Structure formats: structure tokens, C-alpha cells
Image (cartoon, rainbow, N blue to C red; front, top):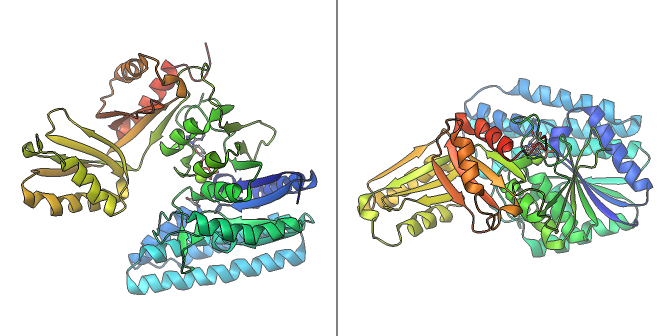
Amino acid sequence: MGLRLLVMKFGGSCLTDGDSILRAAELVRDAFNRGDGIVAVVSAMKGVTDRLLNMVEGSLRGEDVREEIESLRADHVEATRRAVGDVEVRGEVERIVTTTISELERVLTAIGYLEEVTPRSRDYILSFGERLSTPILWGAIRSQGLKASWMTGGEAGIVTDSNFGEARPLMENTRLRVEAKLKPLLEKGIIPVVTGFIGEDLDRVVTTLGRGGSDYTATLIGEVLGADEIYLWTDVEGLMTADPRIVPEARIIEEISFEEAVEMAVFGAKRMHPRALVPAMRAGIPVVIKSLRRPEVRGTRITGEVKIGEGVVKAVTLVRGVGLLNVQGLRMIGMPGVAGRVCQLLGRKGINIFMISQSVSEANISLMISKDRLYQAESLIENALLGTGLISDVYVEEDVCVVAVVGAGMRGTPGVAARVFKAVASRGINVRMIAQGSSELNISFVVKEEDGEEAVRAIHQEFNLSGKT
Ligand code: ADP
Ligand code: ASP
Ligand code: MG
């Protein structure tokens, strides 16, 4: 094994074409030649997971998606030609791509006939993005003269429960299997190239960890193998004070603690899986976020150290794809346990609650949940509680988003909330709901979807996060 062990995850955002995959392979080669042991974790190429989701929807509507499948094939074959220099290896990768695409076509055809998709088959289809990109990086690394072996997350030993779409790793099994599979390869100087995002349940059925899950795959493997560092290569130069697409003058945060970064991830920064940093935090392994295009830029280093003193607010993020579920009823007043029952009902169905607030009068509870579960949650509550007379109305609001202000320095600093809300109000934006976690690491609030970006800019400016004076 090498001097150090590095897990290098390549994000879909930066895997745009064959040239970028070639660059990824060169980074792996350089690190390997410095004497480091490497595990590469690979996301689907940019936009592919969304394209797969659209194909599922199209097939369900009875549309012919052969054209989309063909363009997916063409893109991956083209990427292979550019990234994989060795002719023999290239042929091997092209055959894998072709076989994988035929399999995808068969599954989508079946869905078209059945006009039905289960969470299990949806996960299976989503796994094709990573199963197409990973062999290409594998081929590119081998073309650099290194030994490598590619495998799915399940084959690498990531074992999960069967909660398709958002599967949770079973750590005991994962620990055993990942060690047994990857250690011997590393000892032989072979680079494991693993699909991100996907695992396998105990029956060996393919599962996915949830959107943005490749980061999670990387930290899980890093934890199990006791890696020295985990690199998340992406299309931005680090974790930034805000999404650069919303605030062009956003700045790179050079150092940040796990606590703060987790808060940012939960609230949508870098579209990272909310639990992705947990394994690294547990194991105390630094996570470095860097740009594949500009690897010379230092990027962001996430470690266990909390550095306050760099301003109270570190970052401001925007969460889309959420909605409000409002539960109303005068009879809730003074009736203990209604909020508890609502949460329990949702929890049993695996519907995650991001935020909850209850008005002082207790006649209203608002819950923030993922938009794609909103209507399911509404009927769940209606069916269970309307008949009881405890509540009189349930309704949803779709056109909302959450703005989260993050920074360890907010802890115990008075007046931060006042500044936040004043800045937002001065732009004429109405705040619908507020929550401050007891950690005091973040203040989050709900505004109309169309106001979200402006609210982010207002706060970025108020706390001078771009560092301009
Ligand atoms: P990857 O595919 O590498 O995992 P993602 O698309 O998941 O990358 O995340 C990177 C994207 O996250 C960037 O392109 C950027 O637009 C967005 N983003 C949102 N908020 C932030 C933030 N605070 N810092 C950095 N990137 C952010
Ligand atoms: N390809 C998956 C997604 O788009 C996983 C990832 O990129 O992290 O969500
Ligand atoms: Mg991502």
C-alpha cells in the first residue's frame, strides 16, 4: 500500500466529457506516482441521472425513449474515445458501455409495457449513470499505465437497507465487506474504481443512497479504510459563501468545520447528500473540495477544528424542492400531542421533516418537507386526522424555498437574527416561517420561491461575505 491512502471522488458536475474524465485519470496517476494509495469514486456524467429520471417518466407516459437512450450511448462512446488512449482497453470499455445501454433499453421497455415503476426498479435505472461513467474512468486510468479494477458500490461492499431512493448504509456489513474487497486490491497496487451513489441491500438488490450520494460513498469508503484524506473533485473551486450561480461575487471558504459544513450540506450547498460528511466526521478524516479544472487552487478543507473569529456568518444557502404542509384546527389548542402524531405519521412513511413551527395560538402547525412527498403527506394527514375532529384543514404550499444562514460564530452572538431579517425586509421580501436550530449554527427561514435568490443576495451583502470593503 502507498504512503497515504486517499479517496478521490469525481463529481458529475465536472465529468462533462471525455477530456474531463482524462483529466481525472491524470490526477489519479499523479497521486499514485507520488506514492499514495488511491480509491476512485465516480459519479454519473453531468446531467445523466436527471436524463435517466426523465426517461423513466417518458416510458411511464408511454413515450418512445429510444432516441434519448441512443444519445446517452453516443455521449458515453464519445467520452470513451477521448478519455481512453489505449486501443485495446478502449475496445473493452466500449463493449461494456454497449452492453450496459442494451440492458437499460430492456428495463425501460419493460416499464413502458407495465406503465408502472416501483422504487426498486427506479433505483435500478438510476444506477446506470454511474455504471456507464465508471468503466470509462477505469479505462482512462489503465491507459495511464496503472493497474485498476472497476466495480459497483454494492460489489465494493456498500450494504444498505432496502429503503429505495434513500437507502441507509448498514455499517457493520459495509465495514466487513469493503475491507475484504478493497484492502487486498490496494495491497497489490491496484486502484479500485467504484461507482458512487449506489449500494446493494442484503438480498443483493441495487439501491441508491439518495441524490448527491456519491460524496457519501466516498466518505463511507474513507471511514472504513481509515483514509488519510477524502478529495471531492467538482466544478467549483471549493465550498463557497453562497451558490456562485446566485451570488457571482461569492468567495471560496478555505477552512470550515465539519459542523458548519454539515449544516451547509443539509441546507443545500453543493447539492451534497445531507449525511455525506457524517462518516468523515466520525473518523476525523479531512475532506477537501477542489476544482477538477483548476486543481492548483487550494479549495476548501473541512476538518474537526472550529475557527470562529472569521466573522459570525460563514455562508448562506438556498434550499429548493421543498414545500410547506400546513395543519390547522382550533381544536388543536390545548390538545397535547397533535404535533407529535403528525410527525409520527410522516416518520412512519419515511417522510423527512426539515423544519417545523407551531404558532403561539397552536391553531396551526407548518412543516417543511420535500416537494415530491408533499401530496402524499397531505393525504396521509387528512386520512388519519380529519375524521378525528382534531384538525379542520390541511393544505400545502409548493412555491416556497428555505434560506439558511450558517456560521459557528453565531453561537451566543446577539443580534445576528435581527440583521438577517432586516436585510431581507429591506428588499421587500416577506418571511413566512422561521427556525433556529438549538445548535445556533444556523438560522433558517422560508420565503416565496421567487424571492429566494434575492434574499440570499441580501444576506451575502449584509454580512459582507465577499470580503469586499
Ligand atoms: P458534484 O457533481 O461535483 O457533486 P454538485 O453539482 O453536487 O457537484 O455541487 C456543485 C454545485 O453546487 C456547484 O456547481 C454550485 O453551483 C452548487 N453550489 C450551491 N451552493 C454552493 C456553495 N455554497 N458552494 C459551492 N457550490 C455550491
Ligand atoms: N449521480 C447522482 C446524482 O446526480 C449521485 C451524485 O452525483 O452524487 O444525484
Ligand atoms: Mg453532487
